[in-house]
Image: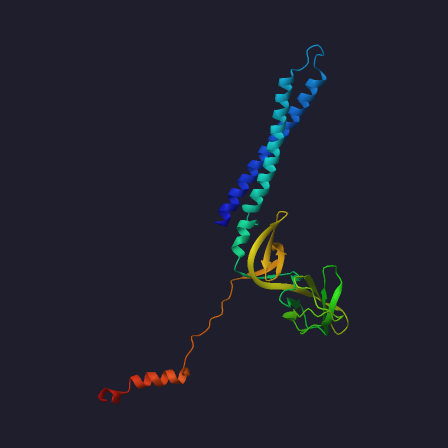
Length: 253
C-alpha cells in the first residue's frame, strides 16, 4: 500500500515539475515579449490600455500558477512519499531506538539510554540544558559493554530543580584504563506515538522526545506484557479441586 502511494506521489511530482518548467519558460518569454512591445511601440499609436491591462492580467495568472505548483509539490512531498507522512504513519505503535540525546523533563524525571562499545574503566554522564550548559554531572550507573538506562530526577549540581517541560540533552564520556576514549552514544528508546512534518522533514514522537526519523536505528513490534489470570487458591488449590471431582467415593455420597 505504501509502495503504491509512493509511486503515485512520484508520478504526481514529476508532472508538477514538468508543468512548472513549462510555465516558467512561458512566463519568461511572455515578459520579454511584453517588454519589447512597450519599448518599440509607435508613439503616435501606443498600445491600447485595455489590451495592456489584459496582458498584465495574463502575466499575473501565470505567476500565480507557478506559486500554486510549488505548493502542490510541498503537499505531495508531505503526504505521499515513502519517507513522508504516509510512510512514517506505519511506524506508530512500534518501539523505536534512535541515536538522539534530547528529551523533555516531564513529571519530575528525564529518561535516556546510553550504549558503551566496550568495557570502560570510567564513564561519566553530563546533563545539558537548552543553552548547552552542564547542569549535572556524575558517574554512569554502569560502564560495561551494552545498552544501559539512566533516569535523572532534575536535581542540578548547584542544588536547584530542573524546570518542568524543559528540554535537556545527555552526554556520555567513557574511557579505558589507559585514558583513551571508548566509543559511546546516547540513545532514546520508547513507543512511537505520533508523526509530524517540519520543513519537509518527518519527525517522530518517541516518549517525551521529538526526533527526526533519520535518527532511528532500530524498530521492533511493540511488546505487550501478558498478565496471567488470578487464582484464588494457587496451583495447589486448583489441583486439589480437580482431584476431588474425580474421587470415586463421591459417586456414593
